Length: 129
Image (cartoon, rainbow, N blue to C red; front, side, top):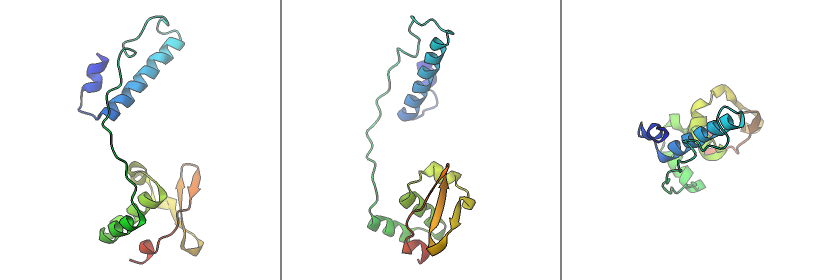
């Protein structure tokens, strides 16, 4: 039953494995709290993680980023710079509010991320296209 629930929707194996991990955590919590018998295995414990495809994670070189940013439309330059040089993921960039990016002295920008701030180096390409 849990396996069928994990398989529906056509989600990636990574997503399914993450959900399986959370379900196992939930059953473990229930056992620790006495909601389930500690000695009996749960339905989730018998399920194995699915095999995830190997993916190559690449890092752009500065020359590649420059080429990419020169070819990109103006409205993508800031997104590419923040993602490429500040290390934010796509979902984090999507949640950014421009009030979190503020001008600083010496033409530096500070990106507020959670409770800390990060100052990526300013690139001439970002300022002067």
